[in-house]
Length: 188
Image (cartoon, rainbow, N blue to C red; front, side):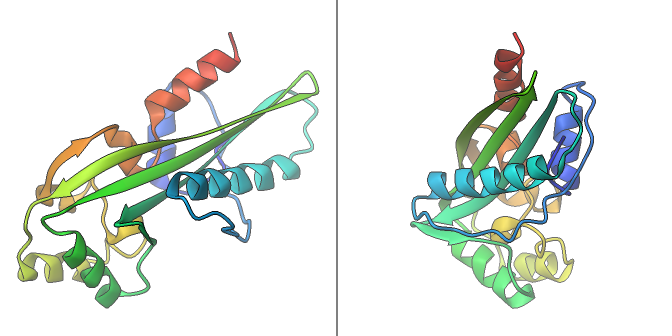
């Protein structure tokens, strides 16, 4: 069960060939941590726990919760409130390197036994210098409003990505290679 309504996460998890249902978390997220890796693991676990608690099926099941944040100079950049905030975020990130953290929490119920595995991945992303007109055009498209850090690496903004170090899919929203291998470890 994927505890996310993100179409990007759904698409990535589908690449594993695993069958899954989507039950979005409706948890009121509470951040009590300060270190970015701890923040994303905490939020991912809250989401997974929220959906896990809703399931009354006695059969075995696995819930996957996930959360992604963008960090620049120790500042967490969430989803922008509006186009102006998106423009400011992207202006700050232009011609610089930032980090994308994704936390994943996998809660498994197997034969009545509960197991939890929570981890994170970090990817460094560097943008080219970006012209003001390009930023205005992108933020006016609305694409930046539902994304941490105000951009999606898999969409039109990809033309501004100079390089990445780490897992590309982590930046999209789910480090699917790591998720697949963690699931494989759990079930073998």
